Image: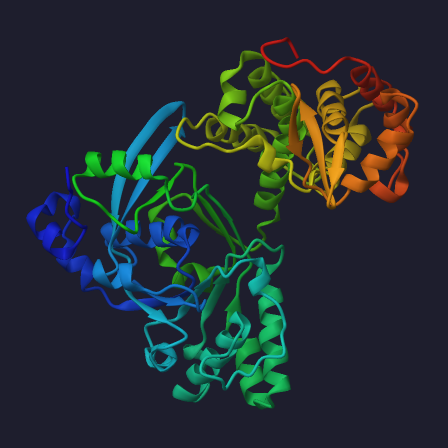
Length: 496
């Protein structure tokens, strides 16, 4: 069956799709957003849309397409309205719902509509900037901010802020709240430093620099929601049948959502959409949220992905459907990692966050490949898990047995059997798998020269250059890892 496009006409025909949509579509512009990606639409734009429906924020978003590839046709054809399928587990219950998002007012291509972007700086009500231009986007480059448009995102932002400054003669009230969502620690201060450097390089004047420093708030933020890229054809068809229309801008996400933003009362007042959903958290310090995510979600992924993969499983969902791996993951996270987070965390809060993570791992609608989690395996192990291991031993000399088992699986996964053209491959059940890690050559040499898996473990654990510490000095840990290394790798439904 051919289904109609999502359009204002369709919404007129099916008003139940959109609560009071005419009023929502007429709200004033309050946010300028650099980036059209699915994460922005599935998280910040979701919160704004929800707040508008509740009559809280009452503002819409001007989206700037920063890249030169592709166009904005799909947005304009649908008048920037799109559907959002939210699917997953929350508090043990399966959620499957669709939302019509009307938060975007218009979409501008920076390459061809830069003058229109700058014109937005003259709107006094538009006092929020949001961005997600990938981690590479927040870099200092030799940019020309007077170009049409500047090449880099920080260059574009500097030009935009200069336009704002001139339009309002640098009044304190004209300052912006700027919230980058790129996955960089301290993304707010880093972006601010680049903007200030661009201002100095372009001789924009001390008064402009003072206005930037005093009256604009660059807020670090942490985003956490799985929003995969464009759904596959099967998913699109199924959702189209369910919704009764076809949407070229359809996005799918998990239920869990978190946007932690660093800021005080002024930031809370400006970002009033935060009132609409507990997933937006505005606090003077968001390190707690970063640590919880890094140590429990990311850390558990790292310690369990190799083990589950070598036992014949391919996705996180499959790992959670297997009784043995599911038990391993839950006990590892809640019993060993949560109590040893290298940060002052309330144990009850850590366990609650851990239970939410387990719900996310069980999501039947998300196919998160275990092999993808192993990319840059060594660096992830060092950053995500070694600080937790050291904190554990500060508190106790009891050996974290599950941590040791996961670490041993990491060492086994990192055993190349084939390497060609600079690429390294391990083997599972006679089939090759790619080892996508900058340390693959290091492990290739170690495995070739080691007398046994136990000897390999001793060499790697004691390598201070790799871990910045000698892990064999931790009481009992090396012996536990070596014990698991001596066991043969078994796949399928064998007991872990």
